[in-house]
Every structure is written in C-alpha cells, then in structure tokens.
Length: 382
Image (tube, rainbow, N blue to C red; front, side, top):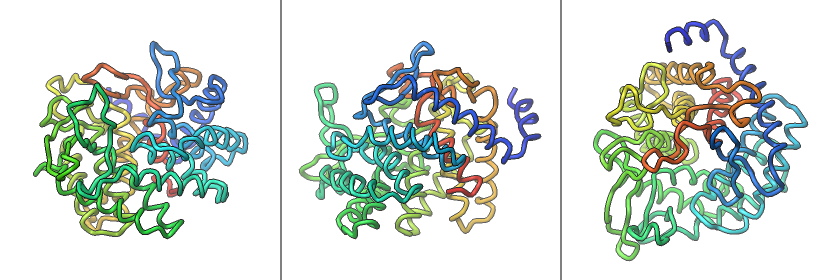
C-alpha cells in the first residue's frame, strides 16, 4: 500500500504538497478554534470527538504554535488573530512553573509569536518563563527535574526524562535575549549530563533516569512509555535527535552534533520503508505494531535541520531523503485528515502512551505542530 501511495504522492511537487497541507491546516485549525473556550486548547480526540485541555497541560503550546506556523506560511491575518488569542491564553503559564514542560508550552507559543512578529510584548513573559524553569535545576545532579513526585510517582526521587531536552531551547533563547548567564549554564549542564547518562552504546536512549537529589547518584534507568526498559521507545528517540540538533544550533558544541548524527544513523537503520516509526522500535508486534505519526513528524523536522549542519555529505543526503519520505507519507490519505474530520486535527495515527492505553491511534496536537515545522524547514522558511 505504501508503494502505491508514494508513487501517487511523488507526482506532486513538495511545494504543491506543502500548499495543500497548509490549506487543510488553516481550515482545520480555524474550525477547531470555534469549539474552544477562552481558557482551553486542543489536545487529542476520544471516540472522534475533540478533547481539550487546560493551559497547564504540557501540550498547551502546540496549538497556538501551529497557528503561528500557518500564519508564517500563508500570511493570513485572520490566522494571526487566532494565534494571538490562543497564545495569550497561556500568559498565566509564563508566571508560574508547574512542570519542566514550561519550555514546550512557552517556546512554541510565545517563542514563535516573538520570532515571527517581533512584537516586544512577548519578550518579558518568555524570559520570565525561562527563569522559572531554572528553579527546577539541581546543581548536585546537574539536571532540571522532570516529573513532580506525587503519590502515583512515589517510586521516583529525581526523575529526568529524555523529553526534557526539548525544554532547553527556552533557556538558550532567553539567554540571548536577556544576557542572563545562568540560563545558558543550566541548559548546557543539563544537556551534558543527559548526554553522559541517558544513552546506551547503540545510541538509543532510556526514557527516564532517576537520580538521588542529595548525591547525584543514578537510582534507576527505565523506559516508562516504551515496550520495556531496554527498548527504544520511538518518540523518545525523536526527542533525543531533535534535542541535540537544537542544542548544536544554539550553542555550537561539536559534541552535540556528533551525538545527533549518531542517533540519526541509528534511526535511519531502523525506520520502516515509509519513514513512520512503530510506537516502539522493539515492539514484538512489528510489522503489525501501531505506528506513531508524532514521532515521525518530530524526526522529519530534526532530520532536515541536522542535514544542514552535518559535514557528512552522505548522511546529509540520506537525512533529506528520509525526511521527504516521512513528509510524503504523512501528507498521504493514510495520515492526513480530510477537512472537517478527525476532530479538526491535521494528522491521524499518533500514540501518547501505549503501555497505559492512553491516546493510542488518535490525533495529537504535537504531531500537527512538528509536521508543519518539518514542512517549513524543508521549504527553507525556518
């Protein structure tokens, strides 16, 4: 089936494909806004019906971020109005820190608003959010804490998830805006400690490394959302290659580039023909295992950026080829929603947490965000 879909899609230029996807995105997200209140944002669907979330959700920044990406590509002022409105919903999240994911929440919303419009009103909340994130940093451990310790997470003392690499861009960008050196110090220290402790010899990553907050010693390494502790949970691998590619861009440390290249090579060796990973690369159900469009979209975006940094010309070529394959697959009828369907999300077939049977084979707001980002990067807009 993939060969037939790809044969048809390859008749379409990437510019035509991008125009088509952004047209669908603009329609879907405009209609989606009509279903929202002044205080919520979209997250996923359940039984085909949109499931919103409060702004405290780690996913809350992706919808306004997607609107900013649509505005960036189309120039539609009506979309800009929606982007501004939905970004302002998150102002309260720039004034308090409830989790490490303040980076996801604020960088995708306020960060894109500032980068795309240059409007200074977004600057102070952005910098304030970065300062708040550093309050979760433990210098003994050398990391910012991920999950809060709750009764359901009492097995942890200081858990750090690979996803946390994605929150570092908030710190590096705020450092450039403010000149506050501690923001950069926290970002670099976190990246270096993660690089040291989170990866296996084959460049796959654990999902969670738990530390003793008093000594910095490692207590355990597990893969909470993957098939097993020793498996390669696909979205975790996507966060890793994206995170270190981003940190090379922000800081210029060649060690980050080398790690991103090695993660990418591992992924290229393991991805299926159509480029969309199974929810876990080690699932025993492969080739019938559930695919994860969100992981594919994140990888595509990072592969395009990494292809522009690596000095390995052969690697750069295959990264761009794989990213194009992933984009074409995601833009096919198998994954791209029809207008008015799919709860007004863009992509189908993502996976939140397979082991807990949460958000399996549903649209997810971050899949849409990184898919649009991949398209913008492919077309030289980012």
